[in-house]
Image (cartoon, rainbow, N blue to C red; front, side, top):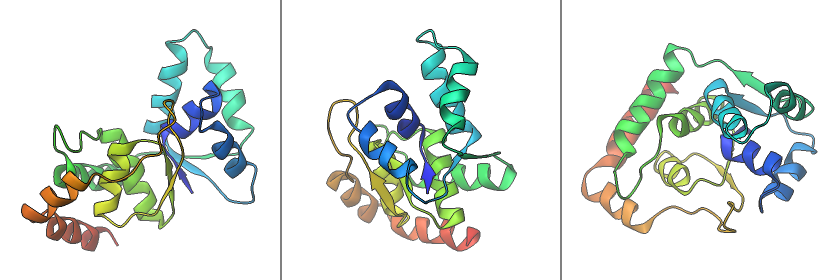
Length: 166
């Protein structure tokens, strides 16, 4: 499984979805996360007074494989974002798209509570393991985004991107 930054933030901050994330990490699966998503989670904790060593200790105990973002993965993420980004319907970040690209590239599920990321991933048929965000909401794909994607031929564009990277 590929972890989004929201999974680590939820776990370490004790948010509502932390129980599900903890249960996944305590299971038998292998977990990966891009270095960019690690930095997102680390930034969250540093801005709240945590030390890098404290963060690393908590993250390292789960044996997460941190993946460098090379040119191919970065380009894949940029292409994904160019297809899905919409300021109002899917304001997904480039880091979110890196997590989607990594999950697609490795053919693994993406663990996230980010609704924009779930929306983006849905267009690429990326398998999602959702968990509740800090407000207690489970992410889901936007109906409005789906309609927009169909009306603007974004699904065909997503298919073309997938063909280049599979």
